[in-house]
Image (tube, rainbow, N blue to C red; front, side, top):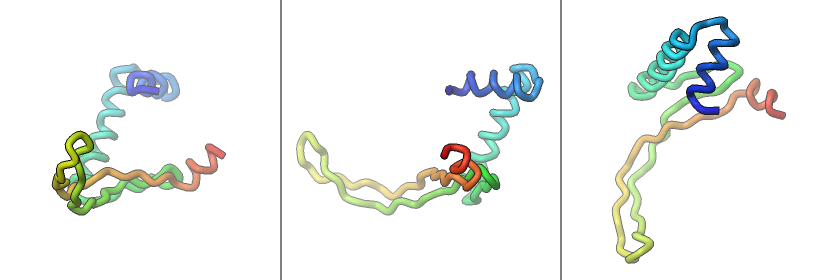
Length: 90
């Protein structure tokens, strides 16, 4: 399912126009992104938790030349599924 299919599904399920559903989906995604940017976790009970994982700097190799390269430290988004989501899938 892509974003447009998600919006259409939400519009049908919640009896909204596609424009309203699109604004709602965009608002949710923007809110989660903003919370992660500030270092907060987003916990949706029964669904899961969005958080930020910190990756330390490391050294890698260019596979074509074998030359060493430095990989800088970074922040990565992380999602851990909640019990309700896991149970729904099994």
